[in-house]
Image (cartoon, rainbow, N blue to C red; front, side, top):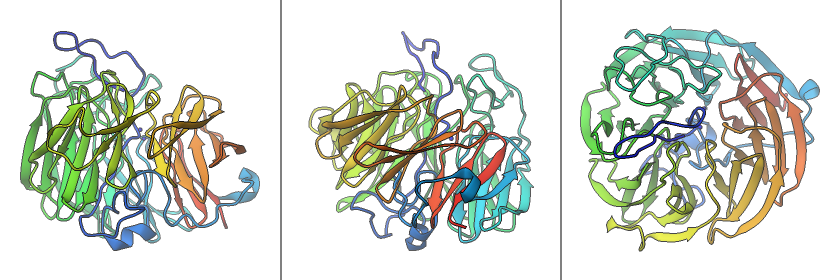
Length: 442
């Protein structure tokens, strides 16, 4: 996957199409080596050689171990496999070793052979996942199916893996753990009743040491419905829970490692809030986006910096801080942030997709460097590999652009796309509406 909630004396109506199937979602390990000095791989040193969660091991869109993807890219000549999926969903593929993992509607976790695309196993969440669309906030025991109108469905959050276990959050409010053979280890219901937002849940879980962290942003900023929770990875027992004075959002938090310690950065209207990931204690907050359809996730944009959607546009904040850092923590404010697709930052630049336009800004100053006109609506977040930007629109057209703003390739994948791609060892892995597709090196 990857959109906000509206407030007026509480809440207004949500206006846009689906929010944040993509988002977001990064998880970082406290002691893994840093990538570009920004953020760290989520599951330890081996994660840099894999793709353990949405947005890749760099936490901001760059593919660390991308290999050499063919250019120009031709679907006919470079298709490695094309496999029909047994269940729909908007979660993005994750990869560890020779395994690809996805989630599917109805509480399914799916495993595929990375070389051939052959299905290896499918598992179903033991806690049932109802499949009906909620009409209003607070509607009990009904959950959204993914549909053409923008509902996130029950399989929008992207899972995370450490190679031994797969941790998945579903749209019925259940966080779960499966082992690499498909056996369910535990499942924990984090919320009951309806999701209290227009589209369902889409924020992905984070793996942090021995904790799995999940944000639940829903309802309105003043109704005390939103919270962030950490459970123990071994058994799902609760480690800490912190209420959040924010409204509905579909963005995945980001964990960044700095000299002063690890920082968990979250965003939801109307605040950007940072926590200590080990305990859930709040470190700082700043005025955030007033846009009521917030789905873009925080991304690292430089040493000790994170870019988020804030009140004046895309804003870079210092990760280190205390108290209210609205004025003191901001480094730069740039163009209006994208609506659904999260930015990608790497090589000293940030790339944003919105309104059929790919925009590049300087990651240190926020100054716009160039714009490139593309076609279509973008829900999938872009990925960077070998000084190229890979972006897929909802119609399933893959665009490849150079770091200096030139369009290199335009490839029709033949199916609609909401999920963000993974790039590893010269191959691009894409979850389309109905298929798992791999193109690139044979």
